[in-house]
Length: 89
Image 1 (tube, rainbow, N blue to C red):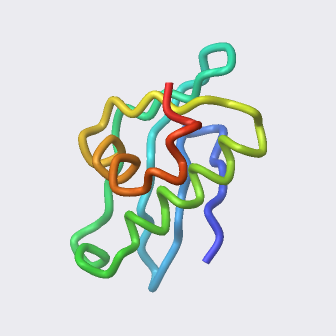
Image 2 (tube, one colour; image 1 turned 120 degrees about the vertical axis):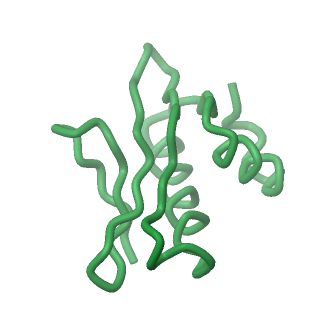
């Protein structure tokens, strides 16, 4: 599945099984601020939020940005994936 940037809604989206997991964001210079990550009930426990975060990391890397994980899920996911530690602001 592909994580897309819905710039009009300021969020990254992952569409799976007719539902959408998303990560709200704002851009501040070279920082990508993630205040909220959410997966609908139907996708919880399926790993969708993790796949979403992997896509957010890909976008940040491609844009040359650091991630500011204000959301507790985003922060925990990044902590569990130290291979992306270079992106954490």
